Image (cartoon, rainbow, N blue to C red; front, side, top):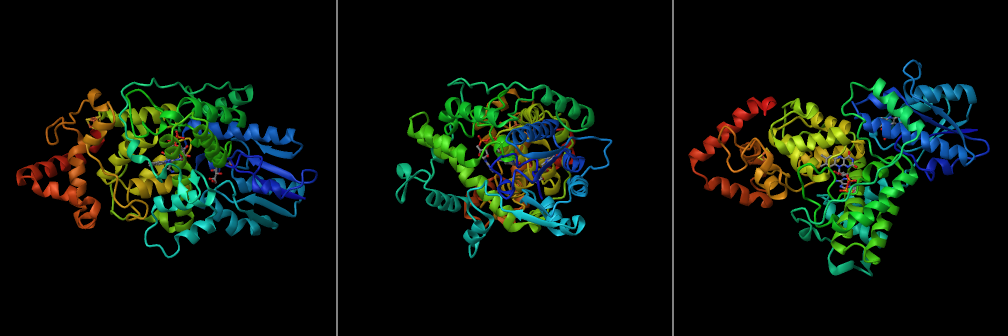
Length: 509
Ligand code: FAD
Ligand code: DLZ
Ligand code: SF4
Protein backbone atom coordinates (compact mmCIF):
# COMPACT_ATOMS: atom_id res chain seq x y z
CA UNK A 1 0.00 0.00 0.00
CA UNK A 2 0.93 3.67 -0.43
CA UNK A 3 0.49 6.66 1.86
CA UNK A 4 -0.28 10.18 0.65
CA UNK A 5 0.32 13.20 2.87
CA UNK A 6 -1.95 16.16 2.09
CA UNK A 7 -0.76 19.47 3.54
CA UNK A 8 -2.83 22.31 4.95
CA UNK A 9 -2.42 24.34 1.75
CA UNK A 10 -3.28 21.44 -0.57
CA UNK A 11 -6.96 21.07 0.25
CA UNK A 12 -8.25 19.92 -3.12
CA UNK A 13 -9.72 16.61 -4.22
CA UNK A 14 -7.95 16.90 -7.58
CA UNK A 15 -4.44 17.05 -6.11
CA UNK A 16 -1.68 15.31 -8.09
CA UNK A 17 -0.81 12.90 -5.25
CA UNK A 18 -4.39 11.60 -5.15
CA UNK A 19 -4.19 10.65 -8.81
CA UNK A 20 -1.26 8.36 -7.94
CA UNK A 21 -3.28 6.47 -5.31
CA UNK A 22 -5.75 3.62 -5.36
CA UNK A 23 -8.86 4.24 -3.26
CA UNK A 24 -9.27 0.58 -2.45
CA UNK A 25 -5.83 0.02 -0.93
CA UNK A 26 -4.10 3.29 -0.11
CA UNK A 27 -4.30 5.67 2.82
CA UNK A 28 -4.39 9.48 3.01
CA UNK A 29 -2.90 11.34 5.98
CA UNK A 30 -3.80 14.86 7.09
CA UNK A 31 -2.24 16.20 10.29
CA UNK A 32 -2.77 19.26 12.46
CA UNK A 33 0.63 19.74 14.08
CA UNK A 34 2.36 22.21 16.30
CA UNK A 35 5.46 22.41 14.09
CA UNK A 36 3.41 23.91 11.23
CA UNK A 37 1.08 25.93 13.42
CA UNK A 38 3.91 27.55 15.38
CA UNK A 39 6.88 28.01 13.02
CA UNK A 40 5.82 31.64 12.95
CA UNK A 41 3.15 33.18 15.15
CA UNK A 42 0.33 32.71 12.64
CA UNK A 43 -2.79 34.83 13.20
CA UNK A 44 -5.44 32.80 15.05
CA UNK A 45 -7.79 33.06 12.04
CA UNK A 46 -5.18 31.55 9.73
CA UNK A 47 -4.75 28.48 11.96
CA UNK A 48 -8.52 28.14 12.41
CA UNK A 49 -9.15 28.46 8.67
CA UNK A 50 -6.59 25.77 7.83
CA UNK A 51 -7.68 23.32 10.54
CA UNK A 52 -11.41 23.74 9.69
CA UNK A 53 -10.76 23.34 5.95
CA UNK A 54 -8.51 20.30 6.57
CA UNK A 55 -11.24 18.63 8.61
CA UNK A 56 -13.89 19.34 5.94
CA UNK A 57 -11.64 17.96 3.19
CA UNK A 58 -10.97 14.79 5.22
CA UNK A 59 -14.73 14.27 5.55
CA UNK A 60 -15.31 14.84 1.80
CA UNK A 61 -12.57 12.36 0.92
CA UNK A 62 -14.06 9.77 3.29
CA UNK A 63 -17.46 10.32 1.69
CA UNK A 64 -15.86 9.68 -1.69
CA UNK A 65 -14.64 6.32 -0.38
CA UNK A 66 -11.05 7.17 0.57
CA UNK A 67 -9.43 5.85 3.73
CA UNK A 68 -8.17 8.81 5.71
CA UNK A 69 -6.00 8.99 8.82
CA UNK A 70 -6.78 12.39 10.37
CA UNK A 71 -4.51 13.60 13.17
CA UNK A 72 -6.29 16.27 15.25
CA UNK A 73 -4.20 18.87 17.08
CA UNK A 74 -3.45 17.50 20.54
CA UNK A 75 -1.01 19.35 22.78
CA UNK A 76 -0.50 16.19 24.86
CA UNK A 77 0.39 13.95 21.89
CA UNK A 78 4.09 13.25 21.33
CA UNK A 79 3.64 13.59 17.54
CA UNK A 80 3.99 17.33 16.92
CA UNK A 81 5.50 17.47 13.42
CA UNK A 82 4.37 16.11 10.07
CA UNK A 83 7.28 13.66 10.13
CA UNK A 84 6.25 12.42 13.61
CA UNK A 85 2.74 11.70 12.36
CA UNK A 86 3.84 10.04 9.10
CA UNK A 87 6.36 7.92 11.07
CA UNK A 88 3.65 6.73 13.47
CA UNK A 89 1.22 5.93 10.63
CA UNK A 90 3.97 4.12 8.68
CA UNK A 91 4.82 1.92 11.70
CA UNK A 92 1.18 0.92 11.92
CA UNK A 93 0.39 0.38 8.21
CA UNK A 94 3.79 -0.55 6.68
CA UNK A 95 3.40 1.31 3.37
CA UNK A 96 5.93 0.80 0.56
CA UNK A 97 5.88 4.43 -0.51
CA UNK A 98 4.93 7.94 0.60
CA UNK A 99 3.49 10.11 -2.15
CA UNK A 100 3.24 13.85 -1.74
CA UNK A 101 2.42 16.80 -3.96
CA UNK A 102 5.39 19.17 -3.76
CA UNK A 103 5.25 21.67 -0.90
CA UNK A 104 4.60 25.34 -1.44
CA UNK A 105 7.32 26.39 0.99
CA UNK A 106 11.03 25.77 0.53
CA UNK A 107 11.49 25.07 4.27
CA UNK A 108 9.30 21.96 4.27
CA UNK A 109 10.11 20.95 0.70
CA UNK A 110 13.81 20.83 1.63
CA UNK A 111 13.14 18.88 4.82
CA UNK A 112 11.07 16.26 2.99
CA UNK A 113 13.29 15.81 -0.05
CA UNK A 114 16.56 15.81 1.88
CA UNK A 115 15.76 13.55 4.82
CA UNK A 116 12.41 11.79 4.87
CA UNK A 117 13.46 8.86 2.70
CA UNK A 118 16.22 7.95 5.20
CA UNK A 119 14.15 8.71 8.26
CA UNK A 120 11.10 6.73 7.11
CA UNK A 121 12.97 3.94 5.32
CA UNK A 122 10.51 3.96 2.39
CA UNK A 123 10.41 5.55 -1.05
CA UNK A 124 9.27 9.19 -0.99
CA UNK A 125 7.79 10.36 -4.28
CA UNK A 126 7.22 14.09 -4.78
CA UNK A 127 4.81 14.99 -7.59
CA UNK A 128 4.48 18.42 -9.24
CA UNK A 129 1.80 20.76 -7.95
CA UNK A 130 -0.21 21.24 -11.13
CA UNK A 131 -2.65 23.72 -9.59
CA UNK A 132 -0.56 26.52 -11.16
CA UNK A 133 -0.72 27.74 -14.78
CA UNK A 134 3.09 27.76 -15.10
CA UNK A 135 5.31 24.93 -13.90
CA UNK A 136 8.58 25.70 -12.10
CA UNK A 137 10.54 24.34 -15.07
CA UNK A 138 8.60 26.44 -17.54
CA UNK A 139 9.22 29.59 -15.51
CA UNK A 140 12.94 28.79 -15.36
CA UNK A 141 12.90 28.40 -19.15
CA UNK A 142 11.22 31.80 -19.55
CA UNK A 143 13.72 33.41 -17.16
CA UNK A 144 16.85 31.87 -18.62
CA UNK A 145 19.06 34.35 -20.44
CA UNK A 146 17.04 37.39 -19.26
CA UNK A 147 18.79 40.10 -17.27
CA UNK A 148 15.56 41.38 -15.79
CA UNK A 149 12.48 39.39 -14.97
CA UNK A 150 9.69 41.89 -15.64
CA UNK A 151 6.24 40.69 -14.62
CA UNK A 152 4.59 42.46 -17.54
CA UNK A 153 6.50 40.36 -20.13
CA UNK A 154 5.89 37.13 -18.23
CA UNK A 155 2.19 38.01 -18.04
CA UNK A 156 1.95 38.59 -21.80
CA UNK A 157 3.60 35.24 -22.36
CA UNK A 158 1.02 33.59 -20.09
CA UNK A 159 -1.82 35.32 -21.94
CA UNK A 160 -0.48 34.02 -25.26
CA UNK A 161 0.01 30.51 -23.91
CA UNK A 162 -3.38 30.19 -22.24
CA UNK A 163 -5.34 32.21 -24.81
CA UNK A 164 -6.95 34.07 -21.90
CA UNK A 165 -8.23 37.50 -23.05
CA UNK A 166 -6.73 37.00 -26.50
CA UNK A 167 -8.24 37.52 -29.94
CA UNK A 168 -5.90 35.45 -32.06
CA UNK A 169 -2.46 36.96 -31.55
CA UNK A 170 -3.78 40.22 -30.13
CA UNK A 171 -4.88 41.06 -26.61
CA UNK A 172 -8.61 41.60 -26.19
CA UNK A 173 -9.31 45.34 -26.44
CA UNK A 174 -5.94 45.81 -28.19
CA UNK A 175 -4.17 46.57 -24.91
CA UNK A 176 -2.32 44.18 -22.60
CA UNK A 177 -2.91 46.29 -19.55
CA UNK A 178 -5.61 48.76 -18.46
CA UNK A 179 -3.85 49.96 -15.33
CA UNK A 180 -4.07 53.60 -16.31
CA UNK A 181 -7.89 53.43 -15.95
CA UNK A 182 -7.57 51.63 -12.60
CA UNK A 183 -6.58 54.48 -10.30
CA UNK A 184 -9.87 56.07 -9.33
CA UNK A 185 -10.35 57.58 -5.90
CA UNK A 186 -13.39 56.16 -4.10
CA UNK A 187 -15.94 58.74 -2.91
CA UNK A 188 -18.74 56.47 -1.74
CA UNK A 189 -20.33 55.62 -5.09
CA UNK A 190 -21.27 52.84 -5.73
CA UNK A 191 -21.87 51.71 -2.13
CA UNK A 192 -19.52 48.99 -0.92
CA UNK A 193 -21.25 45.58 -0.89
CA UNK A 194 -20.87 43.52 2.29
CA UNK A 195 -19.04 40.23 1.74
CA UNK A 196 -21.02 37.01 2.24
CA UNK A 197 -21.53 35.51 5.69
CA UNK A 198 -20.99 31.78 6.14
CA UNK A 199 -22.46 29.47 8.73
CA UNK A 200 -20.03 27.32 10.61
CA UNK A 201 -20.67 23.81 11.93
CA UNK A 202 -20.11 22.29 15.38
CA UNK A 203 -16.89 20.82 13.97
CA UNK A 204 -15.74 24.35 13.06
CA UNK A 205 -16.69 25.61 16.51
CA UNK A 206 -14.56 22.85 18.02
CA UNK A 207 -11.61 24.23 16.02
CA UNK A 208 -12.32 27.82 17.11
CA UNK A 209 -12.28 26.66 20.78
CA UNK A 210 -9.07 24.72 20.23
CA UNK A 211 -7.33 27.69 18.62
CA UNK A 212 -8.51 30.09 21.36
CA UNK A 213 -7.19 27.73 24.02
CA UNK A 214 -3.84 26.69 22.53
CA UNK A 215 -2.86 29.72 20.45
CA UNK A 216 -3.91 32.51 22.83
CA UNK A 217 -0.47 34.13 22.46
CA UNK A 218 -0.84 34.42 18.64
CA UNK A 219 -1.99 37.70 17.04
CA UNK A 220 -5.60 38.56 16.28
CA UNK A 221 -8.82 37.06 17.53
CA UNK A 222 -11.56 34.89 16.11
CA UNK A 223 -14.62 37.03 16.80
CA UNK A 224 -14.83 38.40 13.24
CA UNK A 225 -13.82 35.18 11.46
CA UNK A 226 -15.51 35.25 8.04
CA UNK A 227 -13.47 32.95 5.77
CA UNK A 228 -14.78 30.15 3.56
CA UNK A 229 -13.68 26.80 5.03
CA UNK A 230 -15.37 24.42 2.55
CA UNK A 231 -15.24 24.21 -1.22
CA UNK A 232 -18.94 25.12 -1.39
CA UNK A 233 -18.35 28.26 0.70
CA UNK A 234 -15.37 29.19 -1.48
CA UNK A 235 -17.57 28.83 -4.58
CA UNK A 236 -20.11 31.15 -2.92
CA UNK A 237 -17.30 33.64 -2.29
CA UNK A 238 -16.25 33.52 -5.94
CA UNK A 239 -19.80 33.95 -7.20
CA UNK A 240 -20.42 36.82 -4.80
CA UNK A 241 -17.24 38.60 -5.89
CA UNK A 242 -17.93 38.21 -9.60
CA UNK A 243 -21.42 39.68 -9.33
CA UNK A 244 -21.03 42.27 -6.59
CA UNK A 245 -17.44 43.57 -6.65
CA UNK A 246 -15.64 42.55 -9.85
CA UNK A 247 -17.42 45.20 -11.99
CA UNK A 248 -15.65 47.93 -9.93
CA UNK A 249 -12.49 46.00 -9.07
CA UNK A 250 -10.46 47.76 -11.75
CA UNK A 251 -11.64 51.30 -11.13
CA UNK A 252 -10.99 51.21 -7.39
CA UNK A 253 -8.12 48.73 -7.22
CA UNK A 254 -5.79 51.24 -5.53
CA UNK A 255 -8.37 53.09 -3.43
CA UNK A 256 -8.50 53.11 0.39
CA UNK A 257 -11.31 54.31 2.64
CA UNK A 258 -11.51 54.81 6.40
CA UNK A 259 -13.28 51.90 8.14
CA UNK A 260 -13.58 49.80 4.97
CA UNK A 261 -11.33 46.75 5.07
CA UNK A 262 -12.38 45.05 1.83
CA UNK A 263 -13.30 47.73 -0.76
CA UNK A 264 -13.96 45.93 -4.11
CA UNK A 265 -11.32 43.24 -3.58
CA UNK A 266 -12.13 39.59 -4.10
CA UNK A 267 -11.13 38.10 -0.70
CA UNK A 268 -10.27 34.95 -2.63
CA UNK A 269 -6.55 34.58 -1.84
CA UNK A 270 -7.15 32.45 1.27
CA UNK A 271 -9.31 30.01 -0.71
CA UNK A 272 -6.99 29.86 -3.73
CA UNK A 273 -3.85 29.46 -1.65
CA UNK A 274 -5.14 26.65 0.56
CA UNK A 275 -6.64 24.78 -2.39
CA UNK A 276 -10.40 25.35 -2.03
CA UNK A 277 -10.46 27.14 -5.40
CA UNK A 278 -8.22 26.68 -8.41
CA UNK A 279 -6.70 29.75 -10.07
CA UNK A 280 -8.05 28.47 -13.39
CA UNK A 281 -11.67 28.39 -12.24
CA UNK A 282 -11.32 31.85 -10.70
CA UNK A 283 -10.01 33.26 -14.00
CA UNK A 284 -12.74 31.41 -15.91
CA UNK A 285 -15.43 32.97 -13.70
CA UNK A 286 -13.99 36.45 -14.32
CA UNK A 287 -13.82 35.81 -18.08
CA UNK A 288 -17.41 34.63 -18.09
CA UNK A 289 -18.36 37.89 -16.36
CA UNK A 290 -16.69 39.83 -19.18
CA UNK A 291 -18.27 37.84 -22.00
CA UNK A 292 -21.74 38.14 -20.40
CA UNK A 293 -21.39 41.90 -19.80
CA UNK A 294 -21.37 41.62 -16.02
CA UNK A 295 -17.98 43.30 -15.72
CA UNK A 296 -15.98 45.61 -18.01
CA UNK A 297 -12.64 44.77 -19.56
CA UNK A 298 -10.53 47.02 -17.31
CA UNK A 299 -11.88 45.17 -14.24
CA UNK A 300 -11.55 41.68 -15.69
CA UNK A 301 -8.09 42.25 -17.17
CA UNK A 302 -6.93 43.92 -13.93
CA UNK A 303 -8.16 40.98 -11.87
CA UNK A 304 -6.81 38.28 -14.19
CA UNK A 305 -3.42 40.02 -14.25
CA UNK A 306 -3.19 39.55 -10.47
CA UNK A 307 -3.70 35.81 -10.77
CA UNK A 308 -2.31 34.79 -14.17
CA UNK A 309 0.42 37.43 -13.88
CA UNK A 310 1.53 38.35 -10.38
CA UNK A 311 0.63 35.16 -8.54
CA UNK A 312 2.33 32.87 -11.07
CA UNK A 313 5.27 35.24 -11.42
CA UNK A 314 6.08 35.47 -7.69
CA UNK A 315 5.88 31.69 -7.39
CA UNK A 316 8.26 31.33 -10.34
CA UNK A 317 10.72 33.82 -8.83
CA UNK A 318 10.55 32.09 -5.43
CA UNK A 319 11.46 28.66 -6.77
CA UNK A 320 14.04 30.03 -9.16
CA UNK A 321 15.86 31.98 -6.47
CA UNK A 322 15.44 30.01 -3.22
CA UNK A 323 17.06 29.43 -0.80
CA UNK A 324 19.48 32.34 -1.37
CA UNK A 325 16.60 34.75 -2.08
CA UNK A 326 15.52 34.87 1.58
CA UNK A 327 18.91 36.29 2.65
CA UNK A 328 18.94 39.31 0.35
CA UNK A 329 19.22 42.72 2.00
CA UNK A 330 20.34 44.96 -0.86
CA UNK A 331 19.66 48.22 1.00
CA UNK A 332 21.61 47.06 4.06
CA UNK A 333 18.68 47.59 6.44
CA UNK A 334 19.39 47.09 10.15
CA UNK A 335 16.39 48.50 12.01
CA UNK A 336 14.20 46.15 13.96
CA UNK A 337 10.47 46.11 13.25
CA UNK A 338 8.70 48.72 15.44
CA UNK A 339 6.55 47.15 18.16
CA UNK A 340 3.38 48.81 16.81
CA UNK A 341 3.32 46.30 13.94
CA UNK A 342 2.33 43.73 16.57
CA UNK A 343 0.20 45.93 18.86
CA UNK A 344 -1.43 48.16 16.22
CA UNK A 345 -0.93 51.16 18.53
CA UNK A 346 0.22 54.23 16.59
CA UNK A 347 -1.01 57.76 15.92
CA UNK A 348 -0.47 57.34 12.16
CA UNK A 349 -4.07 56.81 11.07
CA UNK A 350 -3.25 55.04 7.78
CA UNK A 351 -1.07 52.53 9.62
CA UNK A 352 -3.67 52.08 12.37
CA UNK A 353 -6.35 51.37 9.76
CA UNK A 354 -4.16 48.73 8.09
CA UNK A 355 -3.35 47.16 11.47
CA UNK A 356 -7.03 47.13 12.49
CA UNK A 357 -7.97 45.24 9.32
CA UNK A 358 -5.03 42.93 9.84
CA UNK A 359 -5.80 41.98 13.42
CA UNK A 360 -9.61 41.92 12.96
CA UNK A 361 -9.65 39.88 9.76
CA UNK A 362 -6.14 38.45 9.12
CA UNK A 363 -6.53 40.52 5.94
CA UNK A 364 -5.46 43.82 4.44
CA UNK A 365 -5.93 44.60 0.79
CA UNK A 366 -2.97 44.88 -1.54
CA UNK A 367 -2.57 48.62 -1.50
CA UNK A 368 -2.56 48.71 2.31
CA UNK A 369 0.12 45.99 2.37
CA UNK A 370 2.19 47.68 -0.33
CA UNK A 371 1.76 51.42 0.16
CA UNK A 372 1.02 51.73 3.89
CA UNK A 373 2.65 49.11 6.13
CA UNK A 374 5.14 48.04 3.45
CA UNK A 375 6.02 51.57 2.42
CA UNK A 376 6.63 52.56 6.05
CA UNK A 377 8.96 49.58 6.62
CA UNK A 378 10.84 50.48 3.42
CA UNK A 379 11.24 54.16 4.34
CA UNK A 380 12.25 53.32 7.92
CA UNK A 381 14.86 50.77 6.76
CA UNK A 382 13.45 47.76 8.62
CA UNK A 383 15.41 44.48 8.39
CA UNK A 384 13.85 42.31 5.65
CA UNK A 385 13.77 39.25 7.98
CA UNK A 386 11.63 41.08 10.53
CA UNK A 387 9.10 42.48 8.10
CA UNK A 388 8.86 39.21 6.14
CA UNK A 389 8.14 37.30 9.33
CA UNK A 390 5.39 39.78 10.17
CA UNK A 391 3.61 39.45 6.81
CA UNK A 392 3.93 35.66 6.94
CA UNK A 393 2.36 35.57 10.39
CA UNK A 394 -0.51 38.04 10.25
CA UNK A 395 -2.31 37.25 6.97
CA UNK A 396 -4.59 34.27 6.49
CA UNK A 397 -3.39 33.91 2.88
CA UNK A 398 0.33 33.99 3.73
CA UNK A 399 2.68 31.22 2.68
CA UNK A 400 6.38 31.78 2.17
CA UNK A 401 6.29 31.25 -1.64
CA UNK A 402 3.91 34.19 -2.16
CA UNK A 403 4.68 36.37 0.86
CA UNK A 404 8.48 36.43 0.47
CA UNK A 405 8.82 37.80 -3.09
CA UNK A 406 6.06 40.32 -2.39
CA UNK A 407 7.68 41.58 0.81
CA UNK A 408 11.38 41.15 0.26
CA UNK A 409 11.24 41.97 -3.44
CA UNK A 410 8.28 44.18 -4.24
CA UNK A 411 8.08 46.13 -0.96
CA UNK A 412 11.60 46.17 0.48
CA UNK A 413 13.59 46.24 -2.78
CA UNK A 414 15.96 43.91 -0.91
CA UNK A 415 16.55 41.81 -4.04
CA UNK A 416 18.17 44.83 -5.71
CA UNK A 417 15.37 45.38 -8.18
CA UNK A 418 14.86 41.85 -9.47
CA UNK A 419 11.10 42.16 -8.94
CA UNK A 420 10.52 45.88 -9.35
CA UNK A 421 12.47 48.34 -11.44
CA UNK A 422 12.05 51.02 -8.76
CA UNK A 423 11.11 50.94 -5.07
CA UNK A 424 7.44 51.64 -4.26
CA UNK A 425 8.49 54.45 -1.90
CA UNK A 426 5.89 57.17 -1.40
CA UNK A 427 5.32 60.19 0.81
CA UNK A 428 2.08 61.07 2.59
CA UNK A 429 0.97 62.83 -0.58
CA UNK A 430 0.26 59.51 -2.32
CA UNK A 431 -1.70 58.19 0.67
CA UNK A 432 -3.68 61.44 0.84
CA UNK A 433 -4.49 61.19 -2.87
CA UNK A 434 -5.70 57.58 -2.77
CA UNK A 435 -7.57 57.63 0.58
CA UNK A 436 -9.40 59.74 3.14
CA UNK A 437 -7.07 58.58 5.92
CA UNK A 438 -5.24 61.88 6.37
CA UNK A 439 -8.47 63.70 7.26
CA UNK A 440 -8.71 61.51 10.36
CA UNK A 441 -5.06 61.69 11.36
CA UNK A 442 -3.21 63.21 14.31
CA UNK A 443 -0.44 64.18 11.86
CA UNK A 444 -0.60 66.81 9.13
CA UNK A 445 0.04 65.51 5.65
CA UNK A 446 0.65 69.02 4.33
CA UNK A 447 3.90 69.60 6.22
CA UNK A 448 7.17 67.73 6.56
CA UNK A 449 9.31 69.15 9.33
CA UNK A 450 6.91 70.38 12.04
CA UNK A 451 6.41 68.48 15.30
CA UNK A 452 3.08 67.11 13.97
CA UNK A 453 4.14 66.57 10.34
CA UNK A 454 3.24 63.35 8.57
CA UNK A 455 6.18 60.97 9.25
CA UNK A 456 5.99 59.55 5.71
CA UNK A 457 7.05 62.95 4.29
CA UNK A 458 10.49 63.44 5.80
CA UNK A 459 11.16 59.69 5.90
CA UNK A 460 10.55 59.59 2.14
CA UNK A 461 13.28 62.15 1.48
CA UNK A 462 15.59 60.54 4.01
CA UNK A 463 15.17 57.23 2.16
CA UNK A 464 15.95 58.89 -1.18
CA UNK A 465 19.03 60.68 0.11
CA UNK A 466 20.51 57.75 2.02
CA UNK A 467 20.20 55.54 -1.09
CA UNK A 468 21.10 58.22 -3.61
CA UNK A 469 24.13 56.33 -4.97
CA UNK A 470 22.01 53.29 -5.71
CA UNK A 471 19.06 55.04 -7.35
CA UNK A 472 20.42 58.19 -8.97
CA UNK A 473 21.06 56.48 -12.31
CA UNK A 474 17.62 54.81 -12.37
CA UNK A 475 15.80 56.62 -15.22
CA UNK A 476 12.46 56.14 -13.40
CA UNK A 477 13.82 58.11 -10.43
CA UNK A 478 15.55 61.00 -12.16
CA UNK A 479 12.64 63.38 -11.54
CA UNK A 480 12.66 62.62 -7.82
CA UNK A 481 16.31 63.54 -7.43
CA UNK A 482 15.86 66.57 -9.66
CA UNK A 483 13.16 67.99 -7.39
CA UNK A 484 15.27 67.22 -4.32
CA UNK A 485 18.26 68.99 -5.79
CA UNK A 486 16.13 72.07 -6.46
CA UNK A 487 15.24 72.41 -2.75
CA UNK A 488 16.98 75.08 -0.65
CA UNK A 489 19.82 73.71 1.50
CA UNK A 490 17.97 74.79 4.65
CA UNK A 491 14.96 72.69 3.63
CA UNK A 492 17.14 69.68 2.88
CA UNK A 493 18.81 70.01 6.28
CA UNK A 494 15.48 70.37 8.07
CA UNK A 495 14.16 67.24 6.33
CA UNK A 496 17.21 65.21 7.30
CA UNK A 497 17.11 66.46 10.87
CA UNK A 498 13.40 65.79 11.29
CA UNK A 499 13.62 62.29 9.76
CA UNK A 500 16.61 61.44 11.95
CA UNK A 501 14.64 62.45 15.04
CA UNK A 502 11.68 60.32 13.89
CA UNK A 503 13.93 57.32 13.31
CA UNK A 504 15.33 57.73 16.82
CA UNK A 505 11.85 57.63 18.35
CA UNK A 506 10.15 55.34 15.86
CA UNK A 507 8.41 53.30 18.53
CA UNK A 508 6.48 56.37 19.70
CA UNK A 509 4.97 57.47 16.38
P1 FAD B 1 -7.49 40.84 -4.85
O1 FAD B 1 -7.02 42.22 -4.75
O2 FAD B 1 -8.91 40.60 -5.08
O3 FAD B 1 -6.63 40.14 -6.01
C1 FAD B 1 -7.08 38.96 -6.66
C2 FAD B 1 -6.14 37.81 -6.47
O4 FAD B 1 -4.94 38.03 -7.16
C3 FAD B 1 -5.73 37.52 -5.04
O5 FAD B 1 -6.69 36.74 -4.39
C4 FAD B 1 -4.41 36.80 -5.22
O6 FAD B 1 -4.62 35.43 -5.44
C5 FAD B 1 -3.85 37.40 -6.48
N1 FAD B 1 -2.85 38.44 -6.21
C6 FAD B 1 -3.04 39.77 -6.21
N2 FAD B 1 -1.87 40.41 -6.04
C7 FAD B 1 -0.94 39.45 -5.90
C8 FAD B 1 0.46 39.48 -5.67
N3 FAD B 1 1.13 40.63 -5.58
N4 FAD B 1 1.09 38.30 -5.53
C9 FAD B 1 0.43 37.14 -5.63
N5 FAD B 1 -0.89 37.05 -5.85
C10 FAD B 1 -1.55 38.20 -5.99
N6 FAD B 1 -0.80 37.47 -1.41
C11 FAD B 1 -0.99 36.23 -0.94
O7 FAD B 1 -1.80 35.50 -1.49
N7 FAD B 1 -0.29 35.77 0.13
C12 FAD B 1 0.62 36.54 0.78
O8 FAD B 1 1.25 36.09 1.72
C13 FAD B 1 0.82 37.87 0.31
N8 FAD B 1 1.71 38.69 0.93
C14 FAD B 1 1.87 39.96 0.46
C15 FAD B 1 2.78 40.79 1.12
C16 FAD B 1 2.98 42.07 0.68
C17 FAD B 1 3.99 42.94 1.36
C18 FAD B 1 2.27 42.56 -0.44
C19 FAD B 1 2.48 43.94 -0.94
C20 FAD B 1 1.36 41.75 -1.09
C21 FAD B 1 1.15 40.45 -0.65
N9 FAD B 1 0.23 39.59 -1.29
C22 FAD B 1 0.07 38.31 -0.81
C23 FAD B 1 -0.46 40.01 -2.51
C24 FAD B 1 -1.84 40.66 -2.30
O9 FAD B 1 -1.73 41.72 -1.38
C25 FAD B 1 -2.88 39.64 -1.82
O10 FAD B 1 -2.91 38.56 -2.70
C26 FAD B 1 -4.27 40.26 -1.79
O11 FAD B 1 -4.28 41.40 -0.98
C27 FAD B 1 -5.28 39.24 -1.29
O12 FAD B 1 -6.55 39.80 -1.19
P2 FAD B 1 -7.69 39.53 -2.26
O13 FAD B 1 -7.89 38.06 -2.41
O14 FAD B 1 -8.86 40.35 -1.87
O15 FAD B 1 -6.98 40.03 -3.56
C1 DLZ C 1 0.02 27.07 7.78
C2 DLZ C 1 -0.28 25.71 8.30
C3 DLZ C 1 -0.70 25.55 9.63
C4 DLZ C 1 -0.97 26.72 10.50
N1 DLZ C 1 -0.91 24.34 10.15
C5 DLZ C 1 -0.73 23.24 9.38
C6 DLZ C 1 -0.91 21.93 9.91
O1 DLZ C 1 -1.17 21.74 11.08
N2 DLZ C 1 -0.75 20.89 9.07
C7 DLZ C 1 -0.41 21.03 7.76
O2 DLZ C 1 -0.30 20.03 7.05
N3 DLZ C 1 -0.20 22.26 7.27
C8 DLZ C 1 -0.36 23.36 8.02
N4 DLZ C 1 -0.14 24.59 7.52
C9 DLZ C 1 0.29 24.72 6.11
C10 DLZ C 1 1.76 24.32 5.98
O3 DLZ C 1 2.57 25.17 6.77
C11 DLZ C 1 2.14 24.34 4.49
O4 DLZ C 1 1.53 23.25 3.89
C12 DLZ C 1 3.61 24.23 4.28
O5 DLZ C 1 4.24 25.38 4.74
C13 DLZ C 1 3.96 24.04 2.79
O6 DLZ C 1 3.53 25.11 2.01
FE1 SF4 D 1 -0.78 58.48 7.16
FE2 SF4 D 1 0.57 60.77 7.12
FE3 SF4 D 1 -1.89 60.70 6.20
FE4 SF4 D 1 -1.45 60.42 8.81
S1 SF4 D 1 -1.04 62.23 7.58
S2 SF4 D 1 -2.84 59.20 7.58
S3 SF4 D 1 0.48 59.31 8.83
S4 SF4 D 1 -0.15 59.63 5.36
